[in-house]
Structures are given as C-alpha cells and as structure tokens.
Length: 150
Image (cartoon, rainbow, N blue to C red; front, side, top):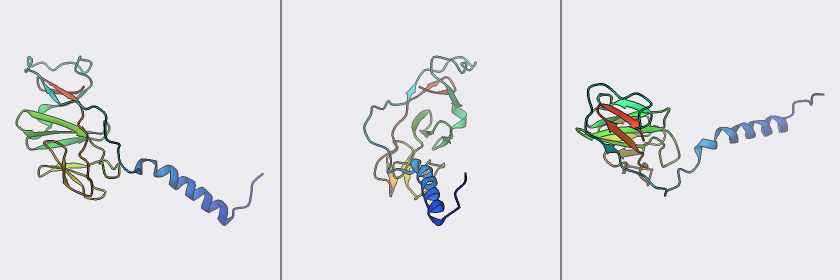
C-alpha cells in the first residue's frame, strides 16, 4: 500500500539523503596517531621488484614524481612528493580543513580545491589556510626506481 506524496515526506527523504551524502564532509581528521618517515633504500638492479615485494603495494616509479613537485593518488588517498632530487615524501591526500581530497601539486604546494588550503611539499605543513593542521605523513619505501606503500 502506497502513501500519498506529501511535502513532509519529500522534505524528510531529502534531509536523510543529504545527511548520508555529507558523512565525508566532517570537521577534518583527528590529530595524533603515529606516523613514519619515508624510507629510501639503496638502488637495486635495473629490474623492478614485483608488486608483491616485501616493500608493500607498488605505487609508482620514481620518474612518475617530478622533482620539486608531486603526484596525487586518489584511489589510495595519498600524495607523493619529491621536494629535492631523490628525496621522496608521502602525505595523506585528505585536507585537514574539512576532509576534501587534494587535487594537485603545483609551485611547491599540495593544493585543496574546496577552500583553497595549500600545504608545503617538503613536510606537509600549512602554506595557506583555512587549514590549520599539516597533512599527516604516510609511509612509503623506495626500492630502486619503485615507490611502494609501506
């Protein structure tokens, strides 16, 4: 048996859908929790390690990450940067302001499209607000020319 559509039903259904859609729009991430620095190991032979190597899931090659820049990996919610030649860093791609995913690395910063926050590629610290907390550091390993999630 169906009920007639009323303004109350439409408003209640719309409010519920909006609440579900905004679950990821919370007030940011909580601080705390241990983080680890990116590790770099000595280059291996020219053959690349397999994706199942001990270093974790293969993310990219070192040539994928430009010196003085970086790359956002949306699926893994991680951004990898190379502030100076051979120095690779990784940070969460989730902006600490309101939980949006950063979308690019340009001019030495990791940029969030939602409210304009920018973070330094070297350490994830805030370069321009409204964010007030740095991007959390993520763990990666560099084995030869391959970058792995740790």
